Picture 1 (cartoon, rainbow, N blue to C red):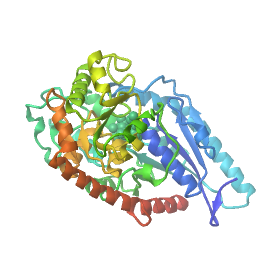
Picture 2 (cartoon, rainbow, N blue to C red):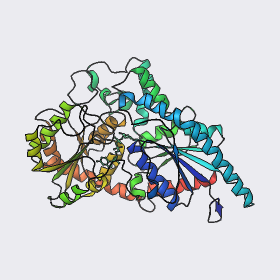
Picture 3 (cartoon, protein in one colour):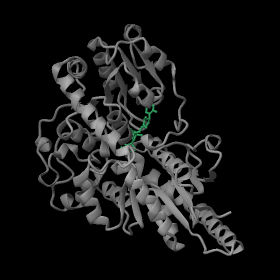
Picture 4 (spheres, rainbow, N blue to C red):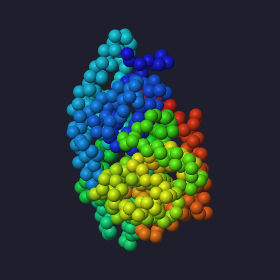
Length: 468
Ligand code: UDX
């Protein structure tokens, strides 16, 4: 039956989720909100790689799309990965969407009511869905899961390239681990306070960079855009985005705090760290996690381990299996070091991150500054140690350290890391950072409460969908 609520016919929503952890989670939160609070019927189309668990969402219909992919790629292979994903998922999705539209028409005519439509909501990396919706004359809404501040950066890169200012010449700073000695530390005037070294795409060719930008910024804009961010946090970037797209932009973050869902983790969460955290002193633990995609060199991982060990602070360190190049897990660590580290902390494969960050014992988050991790840390008022790798992470890092002032950059060098950990956890500077983090936490809480900016934006979104 086509859904009706409050006397108004509701369109069926078809959501297209991406197989990346940092994209899947916000999409599932959005779907849960639109179903349980706004009473829309939900179909989730997803690749076969990293599928959501249907048993967690008995009210949704799931549509697996054949992708012929066996794993996600590292950043260097991202262009090819995204093209393959989009090319492979498109034909079956088109067939499904035609069927859904026809079924919706049948239901509407049998109900003798006004025909209700189908609205496509797609992750921006699953851009094939926007073009299929366009071909079928359906409205489409794009969900963006990176920071809004990333948009002005990628939007200006083609221009910087034409002017000979990008790619940045000098040291290879792909892994952002060592101090710079060249002009890459200069500010990009149009992007203040970002420096040339904060620009993304340093590990790939300019051709791949421009291709990636073309994929991320659609030529034909969708009907509307949803951004997993907050109005107060990124207002100037949002002005640029609204000016560029000229379609409604709804700021609906942080989605994980709008509505809870069962775990969306692709990997099994090691919950033993929560029991361990229960026994630690308040704000004493550094939580270390570099997200779901980053691949790290052995040398850097070893420096990280020494830094954690030498800081003498308790810790939880997530080493995702396969995240250290050439190793399955932590075989790269000398046995003696592992034994010493285990006296003061835990090394786990995957953690229940949101619960860890919410725990009273956690005093700092050493992160790659992925946007979900950044929002999750902000919501819990936890200051950050920033070790960005790619995409929006370097932009987020700069905002955390220089604009919001709730994070410090980590330089992965022997002797440096332990100092940064102690600066954040046990110094006056760290206390001040913590106070600012708590102020931001309060503002985020207001935004997601009744009458707050994100809640209002969600209400407007529901009205907008009903008007389509
Ligand atoms: C990357 C980008 O950096 C991000 O900005 C972009 O929007 C999506 O792709 P990723 O490496 O997945 O993201 O990082 P992040 O956006 O921080 O998402 C990671 C997610 O995994 C978070 O929701 C985090 O809570 C979760 N996580 C991570 C766990 O649940 N357990 C862990 O042990 C580590």
